[in-house]
Image: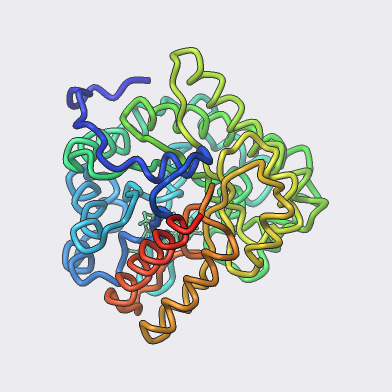
Amino acid sequence: VEATYLPKDFPTLQNDTFLRAARGEETEHVPVWCMRQAGRYLPEFRESRAGKDFFDTCRSPESCCELTLQPLRRFPFDAAIIFSDILVVPQAMGMDVLMVAGKGPTFPDPLKEPEDLQRLRTAVDVEKELGYVFKAITLTRHKIEGKVPLIGFTGAPWTLMAYMIEGGGSNTYSKAKRWLYRHPEASHMLLRMLTDVIVEYLLGQVAAGAQALQVFDSHAGILGPVQFKDFSLPYLRDIARRVKDKLKETGQDVPMIVFAKDAHYALEDLSQSHYEVVGLDWTIDPRSARERTGGKVSLQGNMDPCALYSPKDRISEIVQKMVEGFGTRGYIANLGHGLYPDMDPENVGAFVEAVHQHSKLMIKQI
Ligand code: CP3
């Protein structure tokens, strides 16, 4: 796959701290970025998005580029994540997805029974269906001027399957889990179809200029250890292995991050699933995460997003403890999940500054 929109002679990368931390190499400070750093907590984001359909915005490379760059103009983040959404993949497979204000993502016609798999496109031409994401990445790589690396992303097969069956957000995901118990073979078929599209999609993002890749398994926690091992982990592994094998053919090496929210029971397995980085939510203690992953991977996370409601000096203390817990090597600071729309941008700035400040001092003392 090749995004043929703009030339690929990208500006030289000036800050590779994030990439070095992902590979477990030495850095001068701990790199930091935030999930949903391009989001509604920024007034300029709300202004750019006002009156426009969410997925129309996703389909405009210029809009995606602008929204990706906005947080970088305010804060010295060490990475940017392309503005898009995980649900563009079900759309590429032929499903309708709408973003309904106050409700979130909505599938008017979700998958109900195994026969419904026949409605899905099997061989997805990612260049045709998702070329707009590749264009957004290429454009953003130019406009970011080498300041920081650009992260591409996808939803994990299980998380996308959950949305495609549930038709939107849910507390129990019982419709999707019903499939796992009642239609295990059809479930595996769907997960395999998703995996195939995701592999091509991620390779297309790298060809377009993505310098790291994150796989979001946001609904991993709704599965227990047994179902995660059966219905999520093999596909997460397959994605990393196939993407890496393919990239190796052309001598490319792009760090991959897996974020399986609330799936601590799988931490040991996740640290041996071909990803360089394991992302963590806030419900796990940094020291125990280190012990359980045994130095095999870098870790990313995991401050409770709600800690950003604290006063700034308290944020600084919380960050210090978190960095001490993880240690400064092989560590990327982040939140345990995305920023919320009512968060104060100033406190996000305080979070970023605290990570840089505390980690610089700690690294000097080593
Ligand atoms: O800054 C960034 O993080 C980059 C952009 C990004 C978005 N969605 C933009 C977005 C990323 C990485 C995502 C991933 C995504 N989308 C996930 C995985 C991460 C996670 O949160 O667990 C999931 C589950 C989705 C599906 C989705 N899209 C949801 C649940 C929502 C929220 C709906 C709501 O009203 O709160 C969205 C919409 C969405 N995607 C927004 C943004 C900034 C907010 C809506 C808007 O801008 O109008």
